[in-house]
Length: 262
Image 1 (cartoon, rainbow, N blue to C red):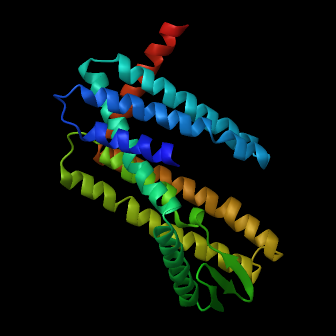
Image 2: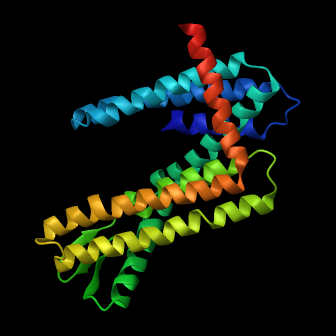
Image 3: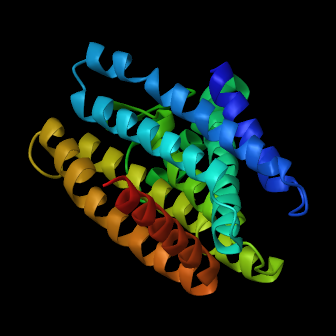
């Protein structure tokens, strides 16, 4: 984890250094290198549990991070600089938000406990038999559901927070509007998602409890979450076209480098 924190710190410093200082390229470049090292260290744990898809994805993430480090050291035109600095800010802010909640026990247990309590409140509001079993567990009709970090929507929250922070030149008023239509909405929709899944599981809405959990969690709410995230992403980028400019700039830079290689 030291390598990860170092990578995020270097990227954060690079995005905060004024544009007149060329040292920010060194901070950003080494930040991406350390980030690639972190990803290269991850495949083993996924292979150990036979999760080959995630093992492949972290290798891809490592190679992309290394490629971005190469571009950071090599590009010096204005458009490329703006894109790379914005990207570094997005990754550092989003990464810090996620890994603080993933690795700091107080924040980790705090958000899981909060989501558990609010889910119990929402299920109870619908009149279903619900009770708290532990700080991270609730029971619906006698069947226990455990809330883990992945159930808190912290990944999506970190993603939107990072993207919004990367909108270089956008006024705070637009960033605040984008934040309000994304992060709080994602969090509230997530509480509804967990409440629906827990209720479906506990009350066997779709056959057996196991079948009800599978249908509600992996089909109904999965589709609903994807549609909601697409809509929220569209609204955020309408408010902050600077994000689309960053993504477009990154795509053009990477395409240019790939063409050079081949």
